[in-house]
Length: 195
Image 1: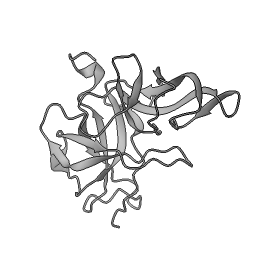
Image 2: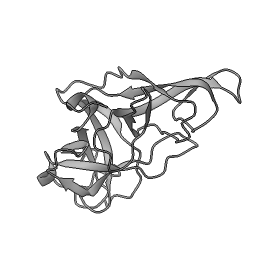
Image 3: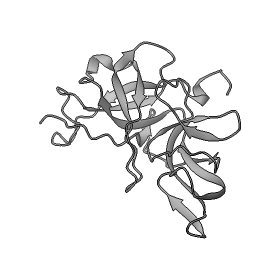
Image 4: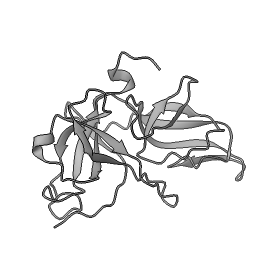
């Protein structure tokens, strides 16, 4: 069955060593003045201010994957937990939760051509952001098939393909928009370059 384009960001599924997701997310801060929305499953980068923000496609060194936040909501008048940062409404800093373990594995849909094949396992790849869903908070990010290369500064490394269950959208390895498994390649804890 041909895959259909339906990106959902980076979904944490385990670690390179084989263990299951630990959900040991790390707290980071988003400035309340950061007007850029960040969705569940978006790549984020560290800023030299101590805060994080949504990464942009072409970013090389990323910090991790955003999986939600909490903040004092100006409109609600109490602490609010959200799967995404809408870009406003916080009184004070926003506490973000990020998966940033250097050996984390993520499932993600490919875009911009394809399919990604077994021959690409071990190569590196960039991402595309897409459009996040404000109703669910879920990211529209995917990995960009057109960027597959050996370039050492691409942010992700292709670890495997998703083929099970066979009827799952993204499990057809012969058509575009197939799902793959990636790990960090050029990331804050896998790089000697400072922020």
